[in-house]
Length: 122
Image 1 (tube, rainbow, N blue to C red):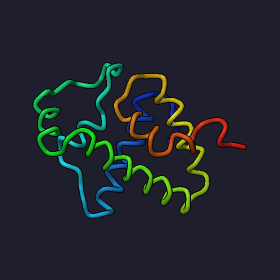
Image 2 (cartoon, one colour):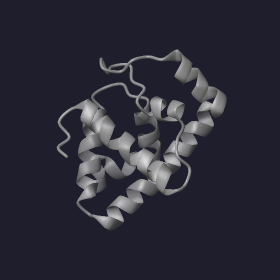
Image 3 (cartoon, one colour):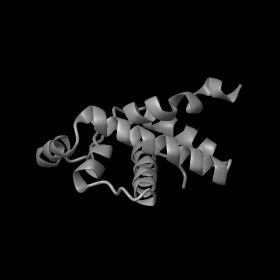
Image 4 (cartoon, rainbow, N blue to C red):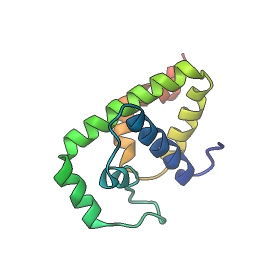
């Protein structure tokens, strides 16, 4: 999958996170999946305050972020162990996504950002 836009990059991460959650037997609710796509700069993102509030009722934001960070760490580790070329896909998606203001970037950065930055090549 070529990562040629912020939307494609976000879809890559969101899909991987949802798959990892299901693999671990803890699928994300509709509200939690919705929050993965939250973005200030994505014109295709439709704000739904009801889903946003529902997510906060289900799980406080700090706990949600920690949960998603854990999923990201484990999915990255699994993907890299399974296919070493995935590291480049992750780097490309992260670099592309950083062009905008996406909530998911906070969790990706905290979980694996240091593994995806330019200096991790050395």
